[in-house]
Amino acid sequence: MPRKNQNQQAKAGFTIIEVVLVLAIAGLIFLMVFVALPALQRSQRDTQRRNDMSRVDTSLVQYQTNNMSAGSNLTALPEGDSYWAACADGTFTDSCAANANAGASANPSVAENFIQRYMNSGTDATTNTFQDPDGVYYSMFISKNMGDGQAPTTGNYGAAKIKKDGTNNRYTIGTDYNAHIVYVFPGAKCDGEFVESDTSRHFAVMYRLEGAGVYCIDDQ
Image (cartoon, rainbow, N blue to C red):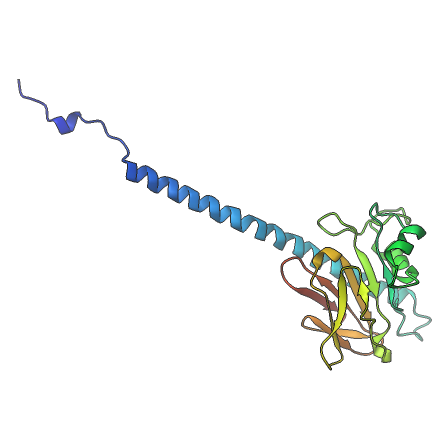
């Protein structure tokens, strides 16, 4: 009886090198997903923020339309260095406004009223429903009308500051996106990540994104 070849009797299996190679590929895929997922989530949140700033832009157009007097007031925009810092629970209260606006705007009513009347998605005008995708309520700073030759205040509004571009009459905002402040500049237009003076009836809206610099949108 012929002898069987010992190689034919050997059972097929994975070598150590093959196992290590498979594990290395799996680890590389996991690492790629681990790195890419937070970036994708940031991008999705920033997309929502851009959409929210578009809502502000649309609401400002509506505000302007509603406050024109038989077409005679073409600069009917909310303005006046008014800063409203939202309360942590979303409510509009004087105590929260007083604490939040210490050293900043003495009269937050313009920005507060704009949020109440135009940005709230609910029916309760006493509660702020205008929220950033990370769950924090948006605050709002509304500048003086730059189209009338007035510069926005470059003081400290929360953790973000309005910053002047050297000797140029252009302005941008601070680097901390956690400030969650929506900046509205009546009489201005966007120039990249800056705003500059324009005719009084126009406006620009700026917001610091989480992963993509400053987003600026205007009504041009």
